[in-house]
Amino acid sequence: MKSLSLAKPLAIMMIGLPGAGKSQFAKQFSDMFSAPVCSLNRLRYELFNSPSFQPQEYEILKRVVCYQIEELSKTGKSFIIDGACNALAERRDLAGIVRKNGYDTLVVWVQTDEPTARLRSVKRGRNDHLAEHQTMNLPAFESELKRLNPPAAAENYVVISGKHTFSTQARAVLKKLAAPRAETVQNHSVVRNQDIHAHAAPAHLKPPARRVQIT
Image (cartoon, rainbow, N blue to C red; front, side, top):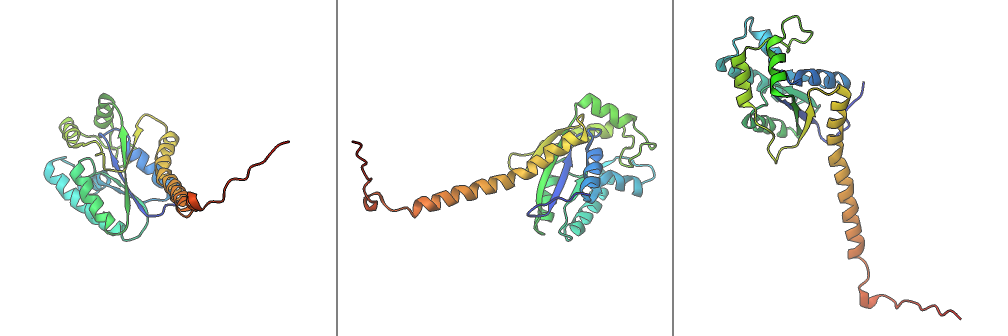
């Protein structure tokens, strides 16, 4: 099993429409890197025999998710948050929790066209192999659609397609995670070069260039 070699532990926030493929990616990424998943929908079907998808139910689940994240962020290990992330305000609250314990955050936006996502979310059922993949009614889908805020410019995020293979999705995420490391190396190189130039002798102190006479 692989591990994520990162300078700081990471909290990965999954966002996207219901049926986009967030939970499928989260499960496979979790299996690949042994990263725990905090799943709102998994909690929903553990706590409620007949979920109503009403706002009161969602608020209860959000509180449980926040509690789980507070505890997970004490471990210093990277983990995935699948649910309670679609709204920008929710992501800011979650980021505030994990950053107190030295975590970085990455928003993974799983994009799937709305008709496909709607069809997936309302036609799946309890026979699905993931507990997160349960039937959602149309009003609940529309509610999530309204809640979804695209990543803000200040957020660290990557976009993947919910119709691509997991290997393609994972490569995109890992490339994003590698980017800051490459940027750091480049910045160190720039600073080093600037330091060398700063310590170079002033032009008026440099020895004159030697002239080579060819006869």
